[in-house]
Image (cartoon, rainbow, N blue to C red; front, side, top):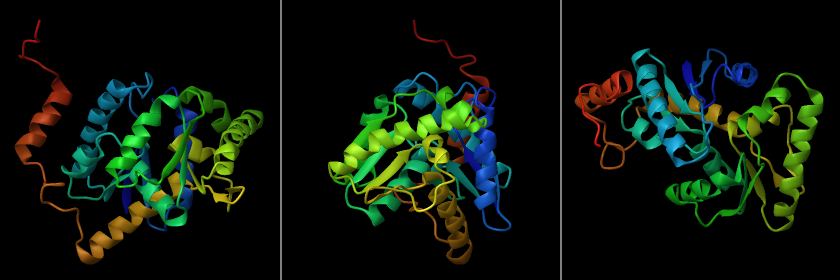
Length: 266
């Protein structure tokens, strides 16, 4: 089994993180599974809706390429899942979202879900996600680490003091929301989840902490196996009707060639 894991970080600027992520995913993968991690250049660097939209378009194009290359599954490895539904409607192979999977997993082991996101700017996005996934009443808290992607670099490059500081910041944010009623914690991103990769049975107070990276990989492997065993796919009615080949060709042409021959307004 071969899985394409799509990160939204720049592969050059964030090489230590992508290297650790690839090592971890392949370490915990089932025998016979290979996970290839891919970044985006430029990555998700100017936090906001427009950047998410740009990265989503690139990720969808990469999802189409993964299908062409014969991958068995595509993972949208960015918690906000931008472009997830569009990719799912364009591919026959399983398309799995880090955010969607982690939130539904958390909903099985706790009632009140607390999210720890990278930056407070994503709070509104996460609440919209929860509503989209039918979990709006289950998200009790969202807190932001208030960091940028590059702040994680030292931790993944082997700086133990940097790792200790990041973990302390995580705990500092989580304890108050557990005290206030959150009973399961989800690191809302592969970056903060990977910081916790060495922990087993991690809890803050009574609240278990979901390893979003691990549950998403294992869900992806399960989706491939279920698809092989039963042929189960997403609904191809209104929810995820497969895009016609012409729509795929137009999309990929736009990404490859831009608006050549089309006069921009103004």
